[in-house]
Amino acid sequence: MARNLDPKCRQCRREGEKLFLKGEKCFTDKCSVERRTYAPGQHGQKSGQRLSGYGQQLREKQKIRRIYGILERQFRKTFAEAERKKGQTGENLLQLLESRLDAVVYRMGFGASRAESRQIVRHNGILVNGKRVNIPSYSVRPGDTIQLTDAARNQLRSKGAMEAAESRGFPEWLEVNIKEGRGVFKSLPAREDLPPSINEGLVVELYSR
Image (tube, rainbow, N blue to C red; front, side):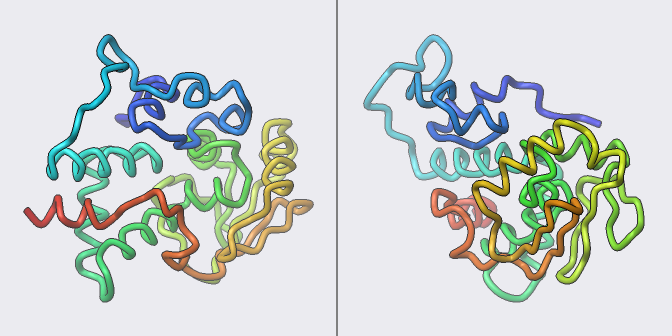
């Protein structure tokens, strides 16, 4: 399967903010965004550059793709589904992205990053309503129970990720039992529960051109 192999810290620096792609490192002073606030590359330190309207829209789309770790074709497919649903397309888009199985596993703290969570899913480490699911893009529905397998729960990296996630707290739309490595996807997240740094309206404008 195709995937983005660009160094994760460079991706964060390109967007000028933390995308939390490197797990616990993003919460420490070792984060590259903390040390170098400019974009990577030879011309990264140039200042005063202003993006056009189209440039801002494209930049926002790339940022959201990088946050959720999906490629252009997947993103377009998700956007098309968001358009078909009732309600605001931008909010629908974010809810669809947050209900992906790898995103839910990450939010529940079973993996330190979305990339690690995706790997846990692919390696048969997740049960959905008691059944093994190894498709990261699987759409989780409200009321679904997500659980680590015994083998996955006993791994040191999963234990470390869950302890760190518990110390930071969990989103309102999830109910998580760290001791059992299990959680419930209670509902789709409301827009106010998601990062305000994301401007999904720009993406809607981009695909409406």
